[in-house]
Image 1 (cartoon, rainbow, N blue to C red):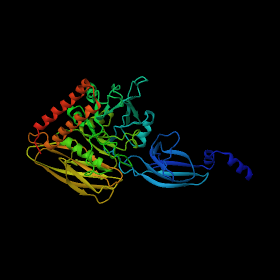
Image 2: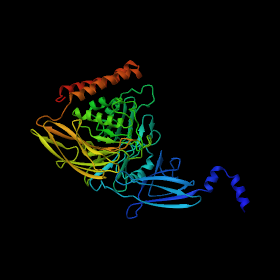
Image 3: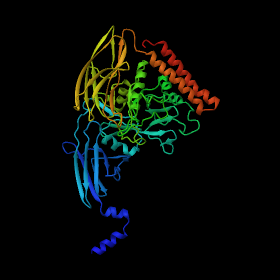
Image 4: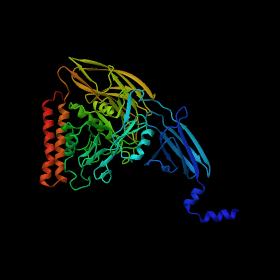
Length: 507
């Protein structure tokens, strides 16, 4: 008998030998009462190689499952990290799989917060995953809103198939995804479109005329449709000053896809570069993103922050960067977008950050005749250590509130305004690999007849940016007629920012 087994093994391929001595690992993930929970699983072998599960959505270093998965694996030791968005504690551990054995793991995930019960509803704006995968992603990440990018420069899912009669899909009682989101990403950066019923006729991103037509052509086309939202995908894209000047954009990506779960994309790609000596990698890009957003607010522009992960292109899971919108119990897909545009929100890729200012949530506009005192009540819930809370007023950190290291902290603070301005609260986690943070959307303060604070320094920052950007266009666009057509929008933007400068009321 033994000689027969030895002969059989010698004629098997290496793959067949691995299967002959394979182990089976069954993982059940449940809540505290034993109900299976959809989740995301990062499972790696001793060499750090990510394992996939047959038939389940896999991306880069993880797969998602409905709460149970059975895997055929080679023998050895495996490390696992199981997560379900920031409202649950992650489960981390290892398991040894001997030859031919079956192991069963039952993992209980502990919920540290239930934001939907508190009236906060999660979503993200940048999903590049297959449509049929999205329902499981929504459940696995405990996400409520996730429009799916199905048309992009040169990549239109609907080019060879009929448009769907209904673009909005519902999962369970309170999860939605729209299959008609789109992205225009070219030389000047990326804009994302939501609420359209069919794709815009975008040019191919690799064409010789990536600068032509101007992205503003498609902003104008989209603006003719009701209930369309346009998102500036990142603040540092070269055309950001032009898009802001148009008044047609509804949000801007403060928690964006350069911030990944385990790493950072440390450069600004084809965007306005930062000073790396002042803002060194790996987290400098994250702070640069914050600074640019504060410049926007300092110009009196009330553009709320958004969030997106670009899962399917960059290594993030769906919903890693997310935005929570406050709606109370009146949640619907349409109401969520209204709340996002109103800035009743906070963005995060980890910490959960709640703030009430004189009893009001983010996005509120305070009005007073001469001065205003504001009492802040701040609550932080986090799986990551956050050393301090920061109160940002008119672009500068005016208070730093230390955190004692606990995962749940409540703090109070006071602010006084003698002049119009804005403020928000930020929490940056101690993480050396990536920029993990949360930020409330801004609050606004109007004192007397002055509606907005407009800083000369910030307006000049965008005026200089416009000149720098306009000088780059002829490097790629040589045709005189097309060049003139594109630069027209740069000229319009320059006039907008000059007008803003004439209204400036602060340094």
